[in-house]
Image (cartoon, rainbow, N blue to C red; front, side, top):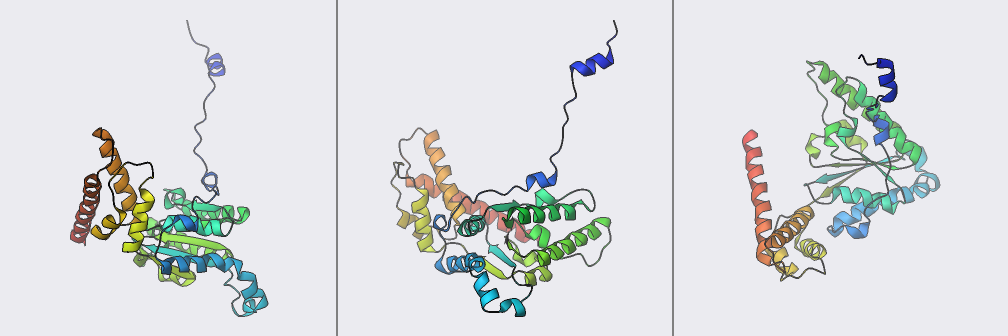
Length: 291
């Protein structure tokens, strides 16, 4: 007996697999961190405060002190947070937004990059429009992917597309009279044209011994049975980022739990740190061979 196709489709309606449009991904969110949540050297924290208070003091500087006449196109502020991975750049972006009492609109390159020529610039426009309409802080994470140097010897259509994307980004930055934050691990890849249009560049460095001590203290839960000494850990292990310390504590805790231990011994934390440093050194050697 044959199947009535019309009845079959009526009984089983098609499910539309719609890929979300890019603008649907540009949704502002509440900042997840405050300045009190991040542990940084005082010099870096001071620069972050300078950036955060720029908007607060904008009226005084531009209107009362007359800088709107001498600096007509400087009401916007671009802040670039650069430095080693895991040093708190993303947390700082959230903290700046929180300080200003605004939501943050986070843009990763994966959100705007398209395999179709000409679509990526359109997606960038949508991100800027979403920030403008919502009054949010616009935050480009891993910004070197979009602010990198333009192609000078164009040989393929993709090269033209890259340059088109960079040009649109420059134009939008010029037009956008509000707060933009960028974060990158590779500032050396930035195109000089973008560097000139960014008002402040704040370098994030690996924590010094005092910062490491505070970070160890922060990541050792009060409920955790342990024999850890934050002072000892800070002295013994140089070159760790806040992210490294967080990861080492969590990895050591899971190892202790797997072994059925009732407390966390410092030897497991030492081992976790050594593994992190060893993998980093291996990565640096591999990168050196590629160069």
